[in-house]
Image (cartoon, rainbow, N blue to C red; front, side, top):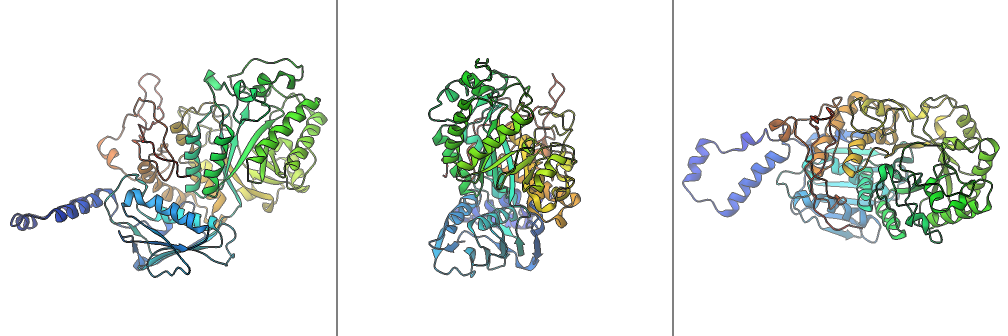
Length: 600
């Protein structure tokens, strides 16, 4: 139903108006009547279904007679003295702006599900480190888990069970109903991630935090940051100051670039950790290193400083694999990044080093793997490092387009595990369709169905399902220059990869997924998230579409949005108009979101 359709039945009848004319209504009556009509306009009359969640939970048992109504006096109760308090505060911060309810968080020694919302850590680890149970009854809503991460994922599910208007950053009058029933849920894979390339184009901290919020919404738990490449070096390293004063000063197209100070990077890591997301930093080696060579020409094979590079070609640069100074540099960089990264992984790249071949290449990778081990971290590299000798815990990130890969299968036989990012399914920098105004098509066009219709457990020949650590959706940014453009490429494909990583294989169904995904559109609009209105998805009509089916996106440059849960909504055009000059659809842009305080 159209969200505003119910408003007609809420208007007073002729008899009602006659009765109302006989008296002067009190201010409270007027406010209550206005709130009721506004609620009917802005929130659906029926609750969201328990089966509408993305990613699809493992078990869902609806109980329609047990719908729960949030009220102005709802209290969030949580075991006191535990890290669950942080999750409860996060939930309250998510729900307060739209509902206008105070939603106090109360710590108690033994929270009971008598009323309100209850978050409880239990000793039951049957659902693992990230699973949760959610029960919705008329009296109360209860989320239980063995860990704060599990509670946090349960909170993201609860969020999706409320009407889409709950994503608004300003008050919306209405009925906040949760569908009755229970959910038992846990992830299929321990690694579920996305990658943001901040080297080709630099993105400020606020944009990265916004991306972290998008990952958290769909229960992704790793953010891979591609921090260095030919076009720019994006992380400060004490002792090597020219990496940022010189190496960071460029980007694709000749922009001014930028970098993250140690404090910036620590802020990103802390913000992610508060949302149970692990940051995976990548220092790409031995290729993709022109920005480092511009800063320190002594690292170049011939000792000659190259000019800055702002194009998009690959494979021409590399650090000198025969120089001890190269390994001193790498040890310092990896040591600094490891010291500021609490997560277990360091990514060393390793792809497209076309000018470092054979034994020279494998010898380089093996030495760098030892340097990673010396920091106490586990090495991750693109699957091109497969021929190098195995080290304990080694992870290969596979980005091929042909599942027949004997070198990767052999590395797995020696103990390597895999993160799957097939270029023709998971690369979010690929175009949706031939006329998509951003992105590439070297791996093919990736519409939403193609992003969803593949099976990680059997994707690579001769690799057993148990060797797959998880999935990751990379977004390279040669053609992506702003946060709205990032969001346009992420949505609606990111939830497809998230469902492959979280939901059991038996739950994967394109027909079911596209219906559930359609319900996310109004949530993105309410949250001010730019997205591609893919024709594959049966999006519900919105008031904007009803009055202007082809809205023209604003021409102004968007201000930097703030981060969830304190971002106020922006105007979003989800159906781009055709540019009369180019004939292509321009990317929707957001307009003037207000700035709020970072909650971390």
